[in-house]
Image (cartoon, rainbow, N blue to C red; front, side, top):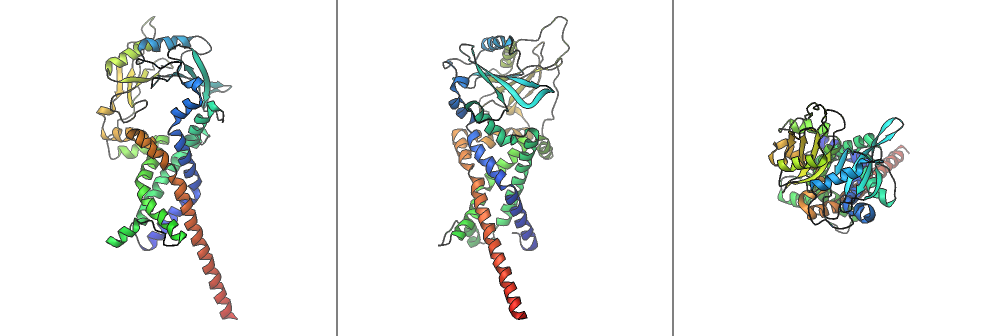
Length: 397
């Protein structure tokens, strides 16, 4: 229980963070409701771009991956930086290319080219990171608004800091809420009451609803902080848990006259390492010495979409250079691997995603109730000041 001057300081800190960043928290919550279903909504809006001509009856094979890369080899495409494989029967291949401007690569933007896995036809393309409200750009724009505030790395830093401050104000709110250790006080602290007074209902909703929502808010805030500013959060986690340090995986020098392995060979090599896993992404070497990076999803991974298993393979031999396996990870890595699927709700499947979607309204609820509490107290303080001034003037008369 916090009393006295410390309580006043904490209440003011909670208030000032809420008043200054409340609109940003509301924006994050509302946009998060939509992007929790980004892939489904994007495919619904753009079936001509993101839905295959026919459902695939078998898993994507190395031969199909090779056929797609060969289809893209000719201008105006070429070898992509990243190839995302279909993650469901109606999905398409998505090849990613850097967008180049007069001053070089444009940061924050990538050219996406979609390829039908059945016919191998190019279905279309768009620029990921370009803002717009057209069908093709709406969901990517909402994603970039949620994570980058449509402002690139600057916006990413702002939302990361906002996540840190949301975590702080949530923890402060929990401390301020803490009741006396008496049964009646504890029960009262969890009650949402009306009693004929809307101000009482508003206050109890903010107080009791806030403590019930606090664990989820804290997880969302901490995970959002990490996802946008991992260099800030990882050292904190590494201070109390084992975290695998980052490593640069380098391919051996190219043998004379050799050519890098094909996408099919790399995929086959990855499947040989993890025969029960599904390959979801292949990142191609960009310069000499780079390795192939393959992302896979193993059975029972907490990350349900692209998986969290990463494998680095030599560009010339396919030899394993390193791996990140969530099934065999230290405690710190496991915690960090959980943060994204907790943030999106996918850690608990469809019920988790539905819950996170509805929870996106929580920042709006607490912003409205918090402002009403502040406004009522401010008006009460102003009336008190006026009455005090009136008494003083009457005594002087």
